[in-house]
View 1 (cartoon, rainbow, N blue to C red):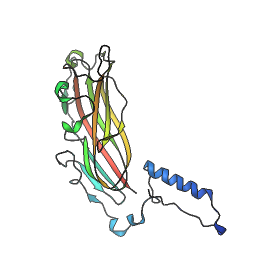
View 2: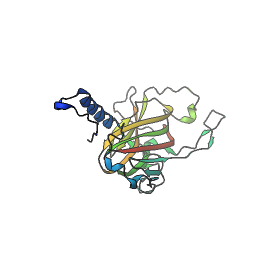
View 3: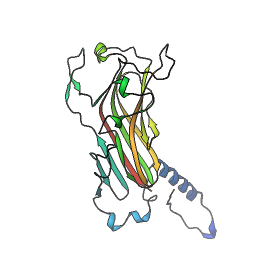
View 4: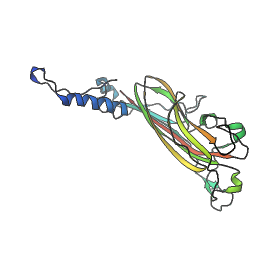
Length: 250
């Protein structure tokens, strides 16, 4: 870990507590991603890097297969990358309601075939807003994932969005994974439609990384022995999604 902090010379080699405290604060800020010029190597500030930045749109992949439909820029001290879906039409009318909602869903899950016990990767069924893969430099990545998520116990046609649901024992949870490791997640939520925003941050080494969003659904109601159960009458829809990350170099 690099930490560049100012030093104040003093006669007879006396140690100043303020300098030690400054080092400690710099290391803590570096770990938390609050980097400044003191934590950046001197070579970051040269004439060659004072440019508008390099376009990395084709470098950062937005699907496992290698598609690159997102936006990315590499700057002198950090790189930005983002991918997002674009459902913008209010043309889906739920059962029992007269006003349309944003839709149709980007993915309608059939739980008996599309969902498995444990974490399920959205990248398996969605091509935008759920996956980023690209090069990072030693430092930290910080970002946020957003998922518009709808999960119902029972047939949605029988309940409608305005109905009170009795699915108190049903839960869902979303998480952000970096190279297959969970680094941030929501708590568990009961059924209904929720828009989740998940901030994340983690130190990284220089390499190519994969960041993706996953979810887990659970039923822990009476009479169920297993932790996870798949039933045929549940509805799980994914609407808009987005994934954003910022790689700050040390």
